[in-house]
Image (cartoon, rainbow, N blue to C red; front, side, top):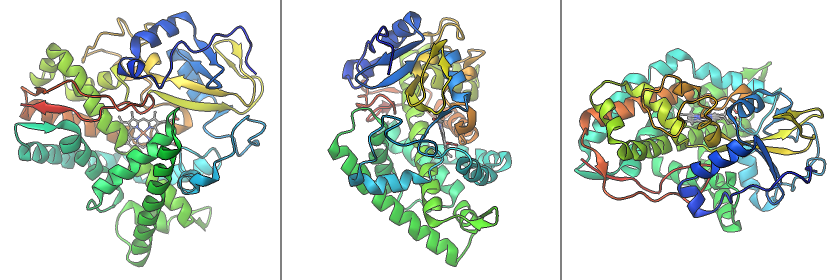
Length: 407
Ligand code: HEM
């Protein structure tokens, strides 16, 4: 239980006006307190950069608790059996696992994300960004027409997944990520469950194809892999491929949307990219810092004796780490609300997480986003918004429904 003197959260994470611009509210909260317990959401919210970073690195905290305790001990609702397809797709996801299972599967995935493999994506990324932009007209949707086909194609290429179902992959992923928000309705959960069913069946089909005819790609690699002499089960491979495909485009696409919206509101900063004064790779770090595509990740307290910001937080409690707040912490970033594409320490943002779950795709995301913004600045230097984009009504996965632009 939480000490009664702690106040409740001064915002509703599902409120549209908060989602439109959460930063003034987050700033006020962060300067007021490093930690706040919310009775309604039954979570402790962590607001400052140093504490968020420390939590990410703390091995006594986990993304999951089911390897060390029961639902009752952790005051958690049992997994709703109506959404069994969704839970099955998560069961072996890197984001659901803790050591030792996490360590074993992460090692296999890391073997495919070698610096060489990721670096080899730089040229195809640039080529793809150019060819997509060259084929587009005067006005287009930066997300649907550019960022989505771009990111999906690159992650599919890296994994060896065909791109002919790329609109299905996007639809499945968009439905599934609704399960990570605070206010998921039964209708959304049912849609996520159906998407997980279709997605799993699709990946199972791919596994069977690669088992029959192996290729030089990651799906074949996972099919052939042995960990401690044992093969991965099909369920393990399915979860691994699903998490890589979903994580491989959701946040990168939203970084393009959030990032261009930020640059459009700061034309001088956009000009620094267009003129080549500031490399796109540097700007990408600032864009992730300034308007993070992932605003919050959670951790369970797995052991007794944990303190956060000097406050004891008992085993069984849940922490919500506010990335967007940490990324605007003036203790780390001077004048944090200012967008400065050449900010020297922008890469100290929390955007890619930290500790054992640190984003395995971060090197790929950095290459991909740099090539994307470089191509935009070079081929469409007069790019501007046609109208004010509309936010997706979600706090955790922060993005726009569409970003209509003209050049
Ligand atoms: C701007 C783009 C991206 C951002 C901001 C981002 C952010 C993150 C964050 C914060 C985490 C850690 C979550 C936690 O600690 O609870 C994470 C994990 C992960 N990311 Fe990314 N990501 C991005 C792009 C990618 C890409 C392109 C891939 C593709 C391979 C990817 C694959 C993953 C995977 C598989 C994990 C789980 C790692 C684990 O649990 O061990 N991400 N990402």
